[in-house]
Length: 388
Image 1 (cartoon, rainbow, N blue to C red):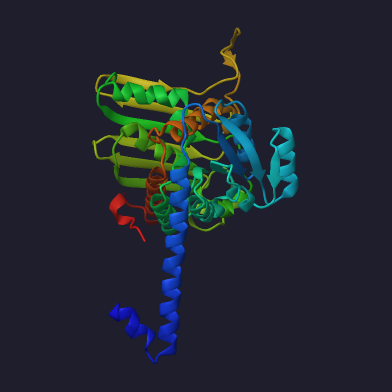
Image 2: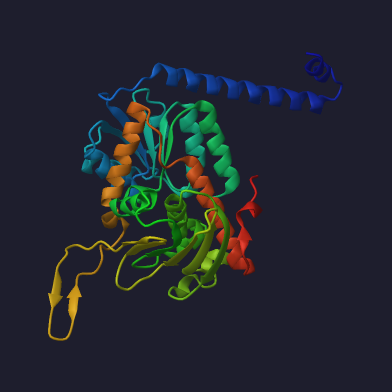
C-alpha cells in the first residue's frame, strides 16, 4: 500500500499519470481475463454437442475451410466475415452460411459462437488471436501465429492466460501419407532414423506483392517442411544450415534478403543425431511436388506424390502418367478434413491438440535460423534465436 500512496502523492505530475495508466492497464487485463475464464467455465462440450463456428477471412484458404466444415459432423458454420463485403457475401451464398459481415468483431461478440477459424492475412493473426481468446472463443488459426517472434509469444501468452484451446493449422501433420511415415518411425518399423529428405515445390511462383509481405521463402513456404521435420523426428532441432537462391523467378530477384529467394536448401540437425534435408522451390514445371523419405537403421519409408489417377500409359518409346495433383487445395484435401475433425473433437471431448501454437513458435524460430544461416553462410544454432 505504501508504494502506490507514495506515487499518488508525488508532486511529479507525469509520474502520477504514468502510475494511473499502469493501474488502468492492470485492471483492464484482469477484468478481460476474468470474463474469458467465466465464459469458458460456463461452456461445456459433450460428444453430442454441435460446435458453432465463425470464419474470419473469405479468401482462398477461408473458402477451403468453409467447404471442409460443411462436411464435418459436429460442426456448424454460422458466420463468415471478410474486409471485402462482396467476398464474405459470396462465400455465405456458396456455402449456405446464415450470417456474413465485413467486421470480424461481429463473430467475437456473438455468444452462440464457440470457435473461430482465422483465415485472414498473416499480419492480422496475432491481434485477432488475442481478442478471440479474451472473448472466450476456441481458436483454429492458419499459420503463422504472427510474422515475428515477439508477436507470436505475446499472442500465445494471452491464450495461455485465458485457457482457451488453440490449434495451429499445420495440415500436413494430418495427411494420410505423412501420418503413415510417422507411424513407420514411431513403431520402430524402420529402426532409428538416420536421415530424412523432404521435397516441397510449388507449380508456379506467387505474385510479387504476396512475396513482399510473406516474410520470405523460409517463413512462408519452408516453414511447413521445418514443422514436418520436427513432427517426424519427435525431438527438438539443434542447428541449421541453409542456402537461398534465385533461380526461377527473376521478378523477385532484387527484393531484400530472403524475399529474393525462390529456391532454398536447408539441413537441420536434431537432438537424436538425425539430419533432415529440405528442398524447396517456388516453381516446378511438372506440378506440385510433395515427397518424403526417412532412411533408418532397419529400412526406409518413402512417400510419393499424389496423382489424379493411378493410370500409366505404356507406349513403344516411353511409359507416362498424369502430372501430380496441381496444388495444395487438391493435394491436402484429406488433411484439411482430418485436422478439422480433430479440432472439433478437441473442443467436444477435451482431447490433446496435436498441432499447437507452440509448434508454430518453434517452426518460426527454425525459419528465422534458416534465414540467418543463408544470410551469413554459416551453421546457426537454434539457441541463437532468442525470445523477445
